Amino acid sequence: MANTASETRKANTERTYQVRRTELPLSCPTAEMILWNSHPRVYLPIEATGEADCPYCGAHFTLVD
Image 1 (cartoon, rainbow, N blue to C red):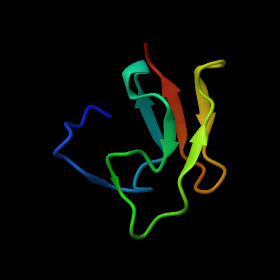
Image 2: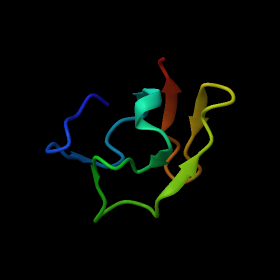
Image 3: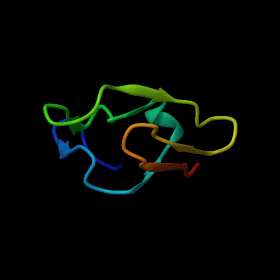
């Protein structure tokens, strides 16, 4: 998710995402995603295991650092 603050991406277009600790707390859709056609934002507990799945769209997130 190496987007700059000025970049946005469509929500739910990928099935797997890599996130860094600097991007926590983790939510799906992420802050960089356009939300108009997505599900409600949900915060995902990724810190304990290093992985999390979104209960709405099934996207898989992996903590990479």
